[in-house]
Amino acid sequence: MTTRAGRRGSRGRRGSRGSRGRGVGMPWPLVLPAALGALLLLLPLVGLLWRAPWDALPRLLREDDVRQALWLSIRTATIATALSVVLGVPLAWLLARVEFRGRGLARALVTLPMVLPPVVGGVALLLAAGRRGVVGRYFYEAFGISLPFTTAAVVVAQTFVAMPFLIVAVEGALLGADHRYEDAAATLGASSWYTFRRVTLPAIGPSVGAGAVLCWARALGEFGATITFAGSLPGTTRTMPLAVYSALESDSDAAIALSLVLLVTSVVVLAALRGRWLPAARGAVSRAAG
Amino acid sequence: MTEPAVGEPTGGGPAGAGLRARVLAERGGFTLDVALEVAPGEVVGVLGPNGAGKSSLLAALAGLLPLRDGLVSLDGEALDDPAADLFVEPRRRAVGFVFQDYLLFRHLSVRDNVAFGLRARRLASRRDALAAAEAWLDRMDLAGFGSRRPATLSGGQAQRVALARALATRPRLLLLDEPLAALDATTRVDLRAFLRATLPETGAAVLVVTHDPADAAALADRLVVLDAGTVAATGSPAGLAADPPSPYVAHLFGVAMPERR
Image (cartoon, rainbow over all chains, first blue to last red; front, side):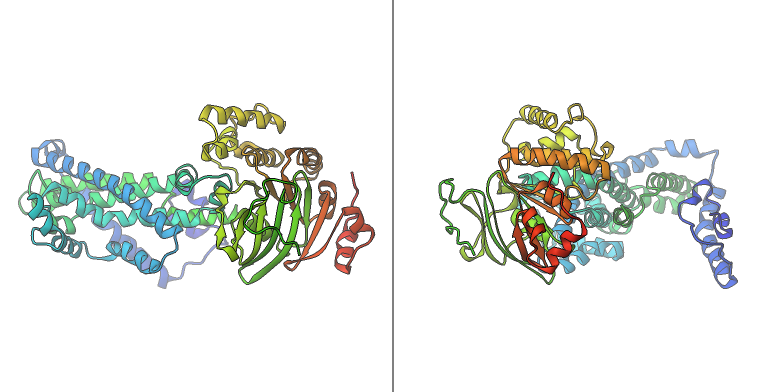
């Protein structure tokens, strides 16, 4: 089971999961770029840890603007995730279960924010919901409400960028799930809403959870759309990534400290999702085998 | 070909009682063209090789596969009548379906599985539905299994839970897809005897799909042999075995001679 390549991978005890197959040779044209690639990914993180002001860290993290940014980020990312679940799960269900004209196009558009540069998303949001925006204009005239540069705008920007991650995870789970359970529910007299609540949703629950974690992590790291659509106002819209960026100009130690917090969060998220990365693909495979 | 009264209920009289079906349906390039009737309390076996259209027939009767043409009526009430543009959704049909691989809801207890239909149809309060489920489990020799998860059941137990779940809403047509196929030999014999005793008692018109002539002969009063989407033969198990109307039927029964109990 343990191949030379597998041992090199050295992610230890759990290595038995993937590497089946016989011992694989190590051709240099592959190993060299692979090692360079790994360095490229890891070196910056090592640099961050190396330069971290460990002694000053407790003090830095207790500073008002740092705590403010941290708290704002946690709040907005959580609300954005909740919003993504409430809106994204039904949307994923629609894309996976209902055949309608233009479904392929809808699917592509929904996932567009995943590849769209976030700053473009921010510009688009500004043009749509800004005070003179396509939709925002009427809101401003009717209620005197203007969305941009508010905490709500942060949430909207984060949701715009992060919801597709949840949708993709949930849609994949729905496509991988055995729809005959829904047939069985129908023959028992269940309406489609009842079936969704009592059969479909419990079956895809773990994927919704994984998608939500992924979504939250993405929302937490959101920068481009936020700074374009919501600005960087301390206490109101300056989330962690924005705080890192602005601190970098004045107090690089604070920037590093904030970065560390984000790094630790990412590692925790990754650990939580271990084995559930792209749950859709895994689900489909294990069900096909089972 | 029978001509059931189209669209007009016969008031539950014997004329319209049970299942009357002429099924013309298509699924992935495969055409199914089958006519059959099943009286209340009668158990009819649908026999045929893989790909004969057995499962498609059940799907069409349950409403999971809409007809292209023909008519399905149950106790005089039309369920699917393309000519009249009438289609009763699966959930509004008094049709119970026992799937080949049971399809028990894995996240629900056995009790909740059996109560599912009663609660989905709002036929009973939660408490009454759960009590009814327990009674059904009793009847299936599964007393005390209510709190178990489906994953902890043996094949024979799971099959009986699936049967209880389908029967709990008191369907007038009961469809069983290969109820014995997934079981080991001992369980198979036991469950066959159990089904033989239980199915006629339900009072429903019962259709049992199987590819095994011995199972069909043991369970059914009458057989319908399907081949390539059409009816190849009908008759009693003994009659078909003694005087096979076609080489195909002879071959089918030659492979495993039926022992009638």
